[in-house]
Image (cartoon, rainbow, N blue to C red; front, side, top):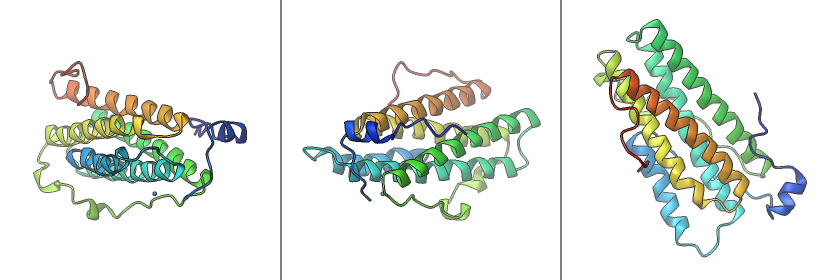
Length: 195
């Protein structure tokens, strides 16, 4: 696993005036709300701080944990064909990689990484998952929410290296969303902009 996505070398840290300090994401509809709430509070500040960056990173980490749990629910549902299951597990692996980098970055910045919750605590709508299409729609909604959440987070970072890393993850979430829509037979690029 390449954890160099976010360059936090001492030179880079000094250049970015990052100080070690010490915690925005949920998926689907809650993702946009999860990022928007702290984002709105932070947006009113005259200048963002390293502590604000840590808060954004930790919310993002919490949302990556949620995505990992959601893909596990889909994988264990028994509703996915082998090729679709393979892709779902690959996407889950991407979310695990995101979580690993985010947790490592929070630690490098002197913060305490957020912890994953128990799967049942996420209150996924498992009773509505009746077939493969339901699972794919659920996953597509989560990925759409994640893309929107990262989009809201990128301009909030005081550290541009962190903004760049979040934008990279945003691209991955958007690809997941487009692929899931395509598999569902829906328009994989429904709009010119992510909302």
